[in-house]
Amino acid sequence: MENVESQIGEWRAYLASAAGVNGRDVDELEDHLRHQIAELGAVGLTPDEAFLVAVKRMGELDALSREFAREHSGRLWKQLVLTGDDETARASGDWLAAFVFAAAAAVTVQIARLAAGFPDEEPMWLARNGALFVLPFLAAYFARHRQLDIRDWALSAAPFALAALVVNLYPWGADSDTEALVVLALPVVLWFAMGYPYMGGTVRAHERRMDFVRFTGEWFIYYVLIALGGGVLMALTAGILEPTGIEVERIVEWVLPSGAAGAVIVAAWLVESKQRVVENMAPVLTMLFTPLFAVMLACAAVVYAVTGFGGAFDRELVSIFDALLVVVLALVLYGMSAREASTSPGWMDGIQLVAVVSALVLDLMVLGAMIARIGDLGFTPNRTAALGLNLVLLVNLAGAAWLSGRFLRRRIGFHPLERWQTAYLPVLALWAATVVVVLPPIFAFD
Image 1 (cartoon, helix red, strand yellow):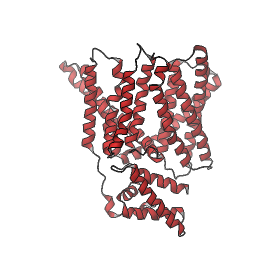
Image 2 (tube, helix red, strand yellow):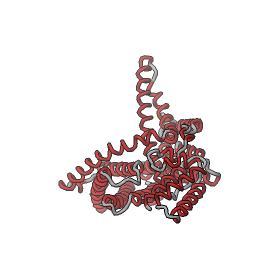
Image 3 (cartoon, one colour):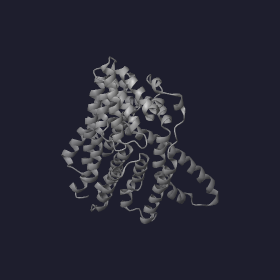
Image 4 (cartoon, one colour):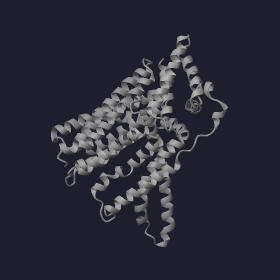
């Protein structure tokens, strides 16, 4: 029955990602599908057989079900749904809307820089509000793309409005450490806030949360590719214009921020319109980087444990290891999003467990060093934020290690492990929001 539940989850996630389909529509269709499965089970069909026939019946009534089957061409039950009329290509996406929102973000960034007096001045408020100049346009793009109603538009805008009020009304001190932390944490908060319109308001659905994780990984891939291409273009442009005496550096100072802002929306549009391309890349990237990180983490854990150097973590080294642990968590999440939930445990799952356990050991070492440092020197904004991050990562990694071990021993299916990670996403968002909202007043905005 668990296999059927995972297939229903994938079917539901696909329907929920379609433009113009809200959570209530998906719930109604899922209820209809489950009703069909229950009726078929009552006449003697096995759960798998009932699911196949129910999807066939749904495909006759609903075009999205047929489209879902076409996308998942490796499924056996796809043959029960697919018809000859479904071989037409998907639309490439609403490129004009993406272009408009990307241009709006690029222009907004330049207006803010002009207001700040750039290049003569670079006030801290410019960096503090950087994410607010871009990510609201990405949220608006998805709200339009998902055809949200007025209520969901308002709910999508609320976190951005509240964040703008908080970061601009707080009385920041000179050279404030808490303000610097806000510059780092606010983009994380707003990215999670952007997840609401991306998921079409269905934030309680675990499959939609995993879809958001998948989108985040694919978006990152496209953004890096765009950045690399833009870097090559600017380097060639600089080489061509250098003999003319034009100040290429000044051009780069103005073009680069706009390009970086617009690429945020362009990358999201590419993910939406070219999903099948990245879906082929994701398993390859996961297979390539997971073993490399597992070996590196395992070696680091052994060396630090044997030499006893784990007690000598300084601020810079703690920052490096925190960044590494965040990357490992991102890699684990993206690997899960690229994995077929119905497949049995494999060697890659074992390698992923090695990476998680090694990261857990390193996290414990970092925590021990941080607690000792706080005991000697007391709390500061940076130490408090780092301690909170490591505790959040510790709980996540411990739960992932426990469930991964049970999954490899075939005690549970993959679904509980996936649910653990998707259920933990709000905890990560809450920690980032705490750094932005709670930490500054606790330390008097210093």
